[in-house]
Image (cartoon, rainbow, N blue to C red):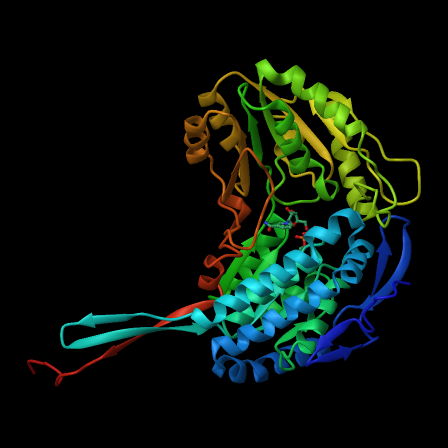
Length: 484
Ligand code: NAD
């Protein structure tokens, strides 16, 4: 059992709630395969409680000043930072990601979002538009009850990235975590209430896709923000469209990372490492198609393999460990299947390629070279520590190949030629691009995809657009001018 474990499965109207009539969801610690907790999927009664309490609480919250709302969020950020270690340990139990990572990028990134949107809340305004004697003004109004649906790779961060801007704008949020990682969002809810958030404004309900679908389809819900796969995104976006609801879709990718001959090879290796191995490869924006210009291919592959050999894979609670297991046995098997396809379709295995012989769902960091554009491992999102290296000759060719994918989440370029860096980035079809670095996603920068990778943006001021709408008010200052 986890010491810091939440005391029940759902968090509704300011307190923990359980309904054991719901289907049991076992929480498995990925490093051992052991069951560490269980929650129950939300029953219709639980979903109803969540919706009714959110709808009831939202109006009073929206009537408060932005500064007041922001103060609550900033207090929650402080509490999260004070409890970073225990929250990081919980994140490690939930996901299997190494504590060495979770101590720095999960609860802390959630706190960043609460702090940022807390700071912004007081400055959300409309504008004044003079129209001769008449004038108009706009108001930025909240949407109402928003639903957040999470993926399993960053459960604390996703709960905050959706909750913080929603609450800052005066909405209520009902968050459904992934059924694989149900624990962390409960702590976020608990802390928000401790920080002064009125009951009902941030509810967490558990469940599989069906619970998410029920929430999205409820007419009391004004908006849905999903982080998940493209197939789920298509279903959720369609369900939202059927009732003309607002939607943010943060979906998957198969992002290109381009390394030119003139790049600093060691730095490019570090970038590619971050782009493929961090969080055991379970990052949506990973640069998994690594295009390496022919002149640096050998040096790049040699150094990458050397550095892979130094990666410490093991007990994620040991702070010396770099990488933990995959989140689940199912995800491990998906990744092993892709590795088998890479081998069968003729890619050259440079390192890794196997499951580790130990308890838990461990896959060795794996690199394939001589990958061609049509291979399955170059086309489909793997979501594991598997890097595909493709050769290229020149800039025009690589841009066309990089863009030849239905996805468009992210892209990266390593080069020391400043004009080339910007020229190439301008042509890459991706929501976020990195030059000479990779996978950094601070809250100040908008994040999201183009093409099949999504709709809308999270983080930064851009997120405000997706959690509020503009109301225009025209004010007539003279009698109505009408010919009949
Ligand atoms: P998933 O699509 O299987 O599930 C995501 C969430 O959607 C889960 O909570 C699930 O229960 C729910 N869901 C499933 N069917 C639903 C339905 N019909 N209606 C409503 N909700 C439904 O994704 P996953 O396996 O949990 O996560 C991995 C995927 O998430 C990858 O594709 C990854 O790239 C993507 N991801 C994207 C981002 C981003 O910001 N763009 C971040 C992290 C992960």
